Length: 55
Image (cartoon, rainbow, N blue to C red; front, side, top):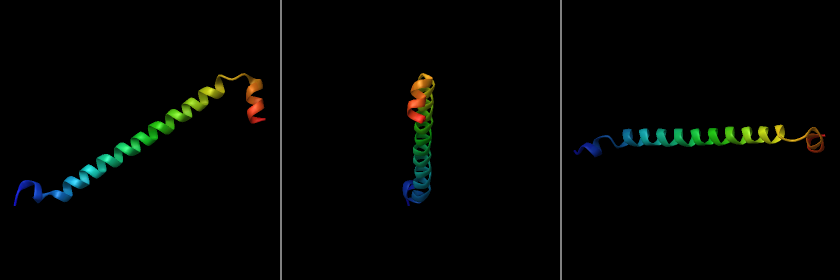
């Protein structure tokens, strides 16, 4: 039995966890960046513009 065939499921589990963690981190960062950009957009507007959009 070779080394690679002895632990296939362990390697796959580690790889899957890494990929899921990377995807989750990317999603959280993109959501955070979007909310910061949205907040910055509102803060940069005049009170009249904010009234027009949000009543």
